[in-house]
Length: 162
Image (cartoon, rainbow, N blue to C red; front, side, top):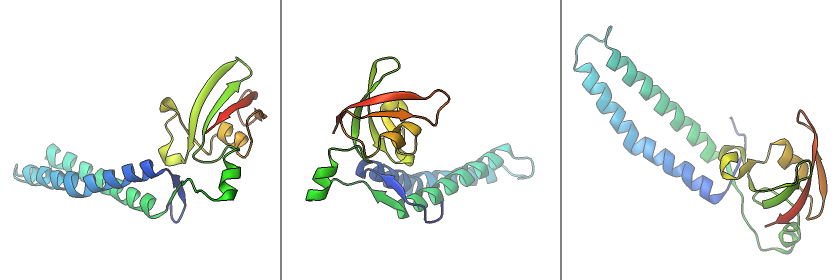
């Protein structure tokens, strides 16, 4: 994760910052209380509550470090108003909302192309590193693209780009 850029929308970046703030200012304090309560029970060598609190503390601190690295290396996907970007609106890019037609079963699907840390395919957010997203990047409405890095290759047609 060292110095690796993470592409993220402004909304996704805000979610990372909010999660970090919650862990640092709220959850971390709750873990300290858990540890204090477990220590008060006496012998730590056979204290399951203490072990569980220490494990919880390790998970929280690990996630805080992970979030700090992601926030530090985040590159926010923005919509710029310059002429070059207006031309690029006609092609699929990171941050685009795309409607495609799967030509193998004639099903239409709409999704937003996001960075890997925001990916949530069940909610219409497809990572830019998936075979489908990679193959349609820089293509325009009407283009037919073949998704090859899958078990059974298939063709998709780009119907709409927002």
